[in-house]
Image 1 (cartoon, helix red, strand yellow):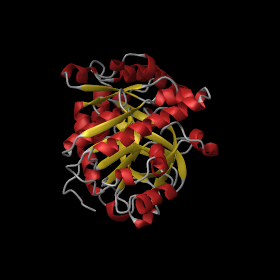
Image 2 (cartoon, rainbow, N blue to C red):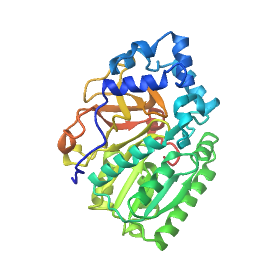
Image 3 (cartoon, rainbow, N blue to C red):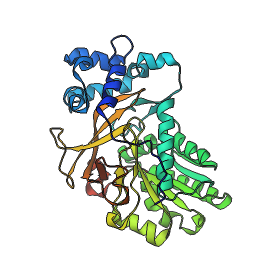
Length: 369
């Protein structure tokens, strides 16, 4: 693997936690939502949280009504309630993002300019580790508009010396088609996506394809690989590719081409797939991008499951513009002990094969994700 000499990634320290607590729980300049919750629950985070263990015990979201209260507030109250007053007063850029709305009305979140710079830096790091070329045009097939992924991929392409061509997806209308049994409308929408991809592929010089995992699975059948013969790397996000599909993409359809996974949401931030090795057995394993984002894999009580076992993904986002203390995702995943060429570089726990149970039972897949 091509290792950059330095990394912005490192384990989360107790000082990181103390600094974020001082910022978000400052009585005058902190974050309105978390201050109100702190008063409501009588936590006294500012006085009692001195490190990560204290944060897990005292300010982590509780599965159930506590998380439901947060989710409803993130849907229906002004976004400024989730940003420290001191950060708002600085006047820096805040990107107002939305989730895809797959579990109800979309939730709102922010990506501040400082966090955005860090994201682009560690994304470059992982793209380089995987051998994704620079100086190439990208084709993005995914949700634009309020969804952060589109804005990120445009920034990836431009930062790495190329242009970004885009095919927009609307995951919310696809959700409606599925819920209301509008099979013909769904099929027509998917046809519309592939027709647009084909036009760009025929007319433009595309070196990197960014696609949702679900559409990537469809690609060989719907478009064929000849139309994208010049593609030198593939990046995907969404539901995890199963090992056999991952193997086919790497070995049969795009031999020798890096296939790289990105995992996350508009509010929780992103993590990148570890450098690919034979030991992976084509299973997709992600490195949580600490110190900004930590992904725990836990049991029903919120305790870490043993390495190698499956549990529920719980997200900690620790950034100046947004605090997300132990958000219970719908996804499940394996807790993975670091191994291989990247183990020393990223020594914190990784996550493997995340999936959403409600969309995989009976081999159902959600929309175009």
